Length: 272
Ligand SMILES: NC(=O)C1=CN([C@@H]2O[C@H](COP(=O)(O)OP(=O)(O)OC[C@H]3O[C@@H](n4cnc5c(N)ncnc54)[C@H](O)[C@@H]3O)[C@@H](O)[C@H]2O)C=CC1
Ligand SMILES: O=C(O)[C@@H]1CCC=N1
Image (cartoon, rainbow, N blue to C red; front, side, top):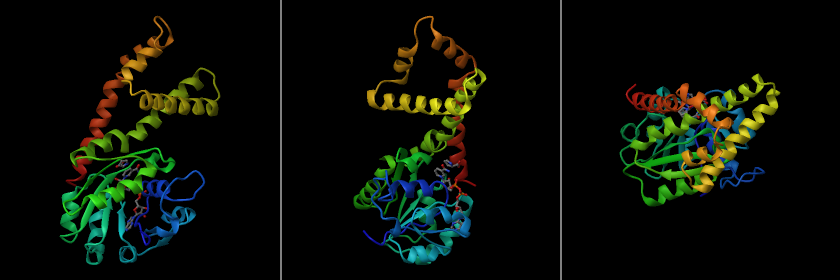
């Protein structure tokens, strides 16, 4: 519906908004930018929203007054103060969507009026290129209609699945934060090539295309990664020599540890 308004600034909110906005060249989004109202305390954080064609304000309450759908995307420790500020303006017709890591639906429901419709999503940065991976969970006042609305809106940002809330922190460790691990891997791939004599810009482009192609094949073939990895390993060839080095460096265990650490951190943030 028109009059859709988003509250929120910040890097992760912008990708989600970008992925949803209609009529920006390659964008298949559903929301006219002029229907989005973003608020942040300083102009610095609003410039990018204005570039997207969205309206902006410094007043969180203005957004809530003029909106149906309200996205919360502050840092976790800021959120309780913002909820206290907007609480008097939140009614049963609002749909409040939090993408704040580590803050549970129970906490959001406790800090908002009793009948508030609350959903929690965990997006990731590639929403900006409409290749995001998102999960969401709904609070007790949310019906199928609101869940379907959110899913339909976000589907232009990439994969979007409804999951039990206990998966949201795991998704944060796997994918919300996981994007950063992949960038680190891309950087390391390119640096290896630079070490061997390839120019950096070319190495970076090839590293990115290698990740993209590998991910596309995983999704399109539905094969287990171990099967595709095996397909690349010519007996006695180059790949198995490289994999041996990666196993000696405990890449697999290290990545598992990383997912575990980020998931645990998301759980702990709920207690901060
Ligand atoms: N960075 C990422 O890839 C992802 C981040 N998240 C979540 O998104 C949230 C924001 O993270 P980042 O964007 O990385 O941080 P950020 O610092 O870039 O964004 C936070 C935004 O909150 C705004 N803000 C501060 N005080 C405010 C207030 N009183 N009222 C309204 N807005 C206020 C700031 O202006 C800033 O634009 C966090 O809760 C994080 O857990 C979730 C998924 C992915
Ligand atoms: O680092 C963080 O806490 C946020 C949540 C997922 C990605 N960035």
